[in-house]
Amino acid sequence: MAKLYFRYGVMGSSKTANALMVRYNYEERGQEALLVKPTVDQRDGARFVASRAGLSHPCIYFSDLQAMTDGEIKRYACIIVDEAQFLTKEEVQYLTHLVDDVNVPVICYGLRADFRGSFFPGSQELMACADIIEEIKTICWCGKKATCNARLDAAGRVTKMGEQVMLGTNDRYIALCRKHWKEGRLSPDE
Image 1 (cartoon, rainbow, N blue to C red):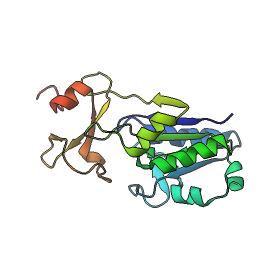
Image 2 (image 1 turned 90 degrees about the vertical axis):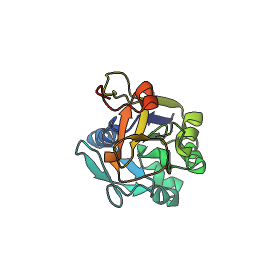
Image 3 (image 1 turned 180 degrees about the vertical axis):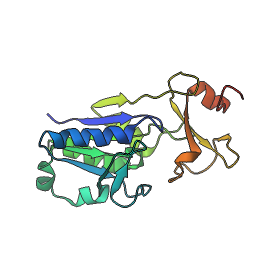
Image 4 (image 1 turned 120 degrees about the horizontal axis):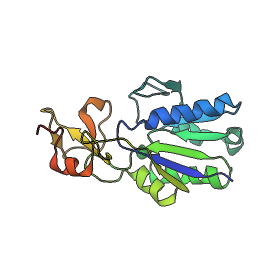
């Protein structure tokens, strides 16, 4: 029986690397997994997913997935969605259709919350309806588990102001534990 998975973590927790490794594992076993991302994610180029660790693979956009028939989708052993936080509530509900009615497992990777500590729409819906929710962990500079995405302003300080989505600026984010995110503390010297 197919399931909807949501694997979330803060920035830099290797979500995309995990997604690419899962896709490779299916391929290595002679099964085809379809890699998908929302159209808004253009950081790695059109129809391409790349991790900071250097792994990469072509993908399709979510709109391409929705344009496919259920019969076309059935041929895949798994659908893997990267940057799932950018999905809409309706797009997540479409994924539940693929799981429940087409019987294809869907594994989503994404952020749980933004730099202000608020849910992204896709993440909120996945937290509400995913069959299995798993955290991909990484650590803060202090060694505690990082649970927050801090955005840095032009001066390199933590900010909680601005638009929810700022793509292509990975150098402007850092993963912190909740305490240091609240304090805006980026190192032990501050």
